Length: 326
Image (tube, helix red, strand yellow):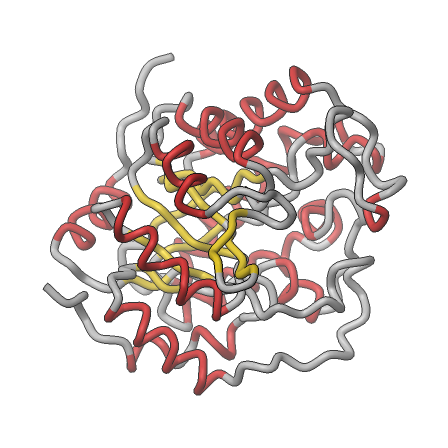
């Protein structure tokens, strides 16, 4: 496949990163759409909003742009074919992924106020449960059993649709096993677009481990995946404590740009994503202090994941340093 040339927006982002500037990624997408009243589908989570509430998706992008972010993420974390098919929406895979890109592009056109904004296409392992791995009880009945070949085909399909739609870069947002992360990474790299490889980590008896359930040290996961290539590394969907512990491990393995966007460690959006009775234990002011520490430790792109939405992103623009330490 021919290499896709960087767009002007990504070229400007690349230059700003090379200059050491601190950049803002948007915050949570799915949980913010949930808070706006969007119905959430079990197997496609927030991607259902692309079909039922596209204007709300664009409104969320607009809101993040007004908060000063430099990078918008498409609402495609859970929009691969294997996420949509159980809802009878498999035939809409291309339409909904293209729509996600267009909504972000439209928001950029009307709300960026002339600032260079990069559009990042999200591709994840959400919905990947193959027959070789046990299915956690909380996911029982949600996904059909897809073969490895089908899953990899679906990931390549989604990544290419996002590239065709005009995203500036691709985000590997894989919370699963090393094997799953490699599948997502390979699909994104195959498009020729700049690709940032995302990792989830967790603390286990003081050790930094990879993913949700996998018994693999975080450093080993980095070694096994970064050998594939990539233009940036992100640490995402991890608790703030795990993020602080995992960032130095990345610094030991990776000399390029690093993004961090942790989650709020809530459980009330895990099942049907409807009950929001919990409160986030980290306040916006505390999050800001943590973000300043992550920048001091070498993170150049700061954002938020599930539970860390607009209220957490708004204060960052004025309070974070303009550049990372030399």
